[in-house]
Image (cartoon, rainbow, N blue to C red; front, side):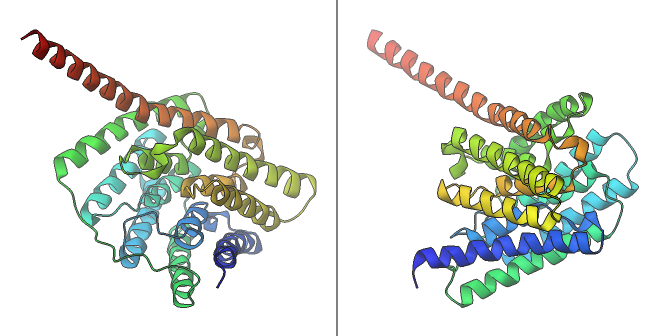
Length: 325
């Protein structure tokens, strides 16, 4: 079968999943079943040619469910400041990622989202479970019918604890600082959950996104803007149901990401996030998302650049010393 047709079928399946989720949320008037990371799971698990995460289907289901329940319990039962709950959710996910030996970073969004949105209903974690299971089922059907390649056997492996702890410890400190800025200024979506996932993704040395950070920044910003405009024009101005706006947001964002060859899952989630925001937050949201992505990207790339320059300088100094000898 033609590869373009296969891609069309995969993107259609991803868009249909997201649209159906928003439609059901409207139908039963329950916003807590609206899980924007569903767009990320659909893009990575269905539309993209290869799964971007090192994870088995069973571990994917377990980790996403664990993240959803952890976030729900922190939001509903844990007292304390918002930034503390966000950091606790992040630390929980770091521990689970190391124990599982996977790179299933979307679980971070599953854990942080209910904390930021103050979710207090069991409908949220149940929605995460159902959406993840649906993605895995559709993925199995696509593979069985030849519409999608089966990824090579995934080898989940747990790395050494100390390097892992130092790496994610740095991410945790950065997240603390940026969270304090975001919450202190009242611009909480500077730390929108998909942005935290993008932050963790960019921190991985083997991440393809790390090789083109400017293009990734533009894709993230454009997806956030696409979702915002879709809701403002299609839902607010024209009066159509949220599912119609979400359909266009999903189509445009996924088409954009696939066209640029950057199927970056967090960007797709940012296109759907506007559909759970209060109207008062909409106009500021794409600017907050752009600011957050810029901050997270700089905190990853600048230290790496400084280390590289320092190593080059050390090399030049050692060569000079050798010549003098």
